Length: 459
Figure 1: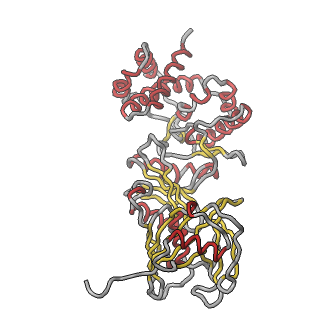
Figure 2: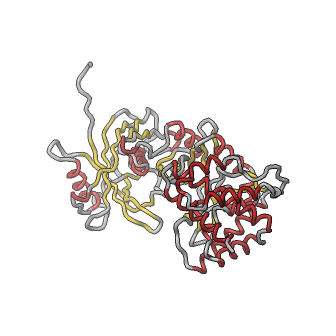
């Protein structure tokens, strides 16, 4: 090792955050006078006064001196640390702290170095902004605890997305919270730099889904499929008939078969899974569900189906489900399968394949219904999409009628026969899968469906 030890100054930055009408807001001040980056927006910040002052004490002091607010040291929380190098070559360590409680109203206290102060939404940050400050904000929003922001000679002092030098350094606690490097690079190439990742994967699925927020405030979903077949199904559906659903479904932004990854536009609403609504609103929602099912099934002309009902895996699934079947269930399943042999196939139309409440989203404000997750999409009989929805209207004839009214017609006798058989096969498959993957909810749903179907066939 040559030369003396490298030393850098340490400065502290205040992330004062409050709730605004459009979401969280952060306090910013505009630098003025004979200072570095005059005219640019920055966080309330400053240097440690000396070796006797610790970082939290420095933050409390700077907040009082620059913004006139009193912060209790107990309310100071560590946010992110950024190792920064300015375009001129000087390096420093910036420690960013988040605070959401204080006394007083923030105001300009040092007009010779600051000429404005205000609250700004994280999605509408002012320009120009010091690139170093923007790096700390973006790292904080991404959930990183540490980051590097080394600018190159000639880089602007103000933030410029075309020369963004921020590199996030996730810690061990964040492992798995963000996609791996290749998927992050794929997503960034598709939509630009992403500053926040939120894992929103469904608990029982092997596929992974993240909500991604971009540096300029856009929002997308990034999904990894568990196998090539699911990836191709979803991509094929999104590139073909899903477009006919309009705003009711996401759009495909990018796809990569090697990674089995897709980037999708975000849709609104909240999942209908596990949510209770007043009866009148439930009927409205189920009417819209029927309309959406009709839109899916009419998105392409029907064609003749050469394949019959999917009985090939019944024995394997039945073997896995047997320990959890009620007395008489196995006999009922086999008798139902025998009836399938003589049934003529139905016309094939585009189907969602997993049309159930957890893949449907409802916007309370606009009354809009959205559908997501097309990895099980394939051509098949239209009633295939009602197999997993039947449980939602069981015991509620008004909801069943609302779906049929929205769909525009009732099931034919042939469709009712196919629906019963498909429901039995799906139940056995769900019990077998749920047993193997320790998913009691899936097992219970299958048992409940078999009990319902058996009760419906009794005199």
